[in-house]
Image (tube, rainbow, N blue to C red; front, side):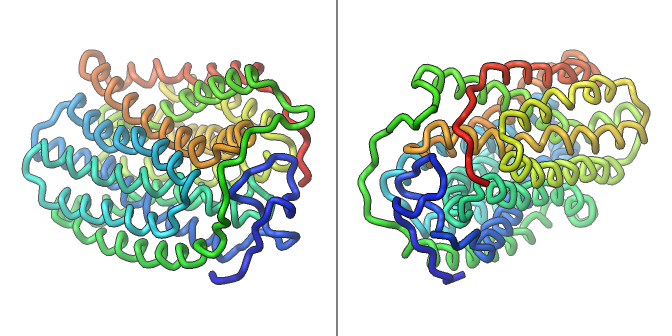
Length: 414
């Protein structure tokens, strides 16, 4: 993890300049660092996914309605959405190599508080603390992944996303095996995962600190053949809209798929959590392959295929049986999740001089959309039905048509 990586603007191998993060000179990716930051992402998102996975327990124990369940998701994700851009903006000016382990401490205390919470307000505070840890983690860890990429930005982003996606998929399994049998108090056991993550991130911080070069914020320069500022602004809005369609659909399954399966097919909570795990695991696999495919064939075409390509399957899901729903959820997860890395790297390349802020905005938008969408969909489910919610959400991937407005970026060396 202490493998030296020389960082200087003269060693850039890509036409896009990032003032404070440049790939190592002909060194290739720093695989140990990528593995460490991806594993930390796995631990971080495993703990975060526990919140949604224990919703059935909290709903039954405290007689919560779907709107209150959505508010828990909102408390968690809105904290992350609000703070991530601010964290990214600050670290653009002054990188903080040990902030990751400090932020993870917030997740540690949030889990402990959630395990003993007896009132709805305390549950909201605990969820917000976990969201705070996420806000600190994502922008700076994405910067470290890019720094260790060796110029293979899509690959590095996919490795980073892979850890988070598998962590998200593990939450329902761990909830089914541990939290459901042993109750809310068993959530405290997962604080040991947070402690392990703190140790790993502190070690990564020791690797990261020497890589930080003293620099001033570099002014933005238009790249030869690159889009104008107006087109950049339009492209960023389009990317936000595309992320909206993807993340809101994934949020609908992550937050309410368990209830949908229980309500429509009469399965048990544990069986429904396994079905949710299958969907989230497919998301993880798709997220990994999306980045390298973007490096190879171009990010715009991957965005086109991954969002619009899921539309026929999302339209079929509300009308499928139990086993067909499982198959469709796997196909949807594989296709729709492959766009995440391409969207994020595309945005980073549009505004390379604000890498941390852009990373924070897009990670934050993803979290915020998920939280706000979960709350709105929960309210809609209370007034209609869970089945109706999935009929409405089935049309979300059609927003992928907006990808036609994305500019063509200068060709990258792969």
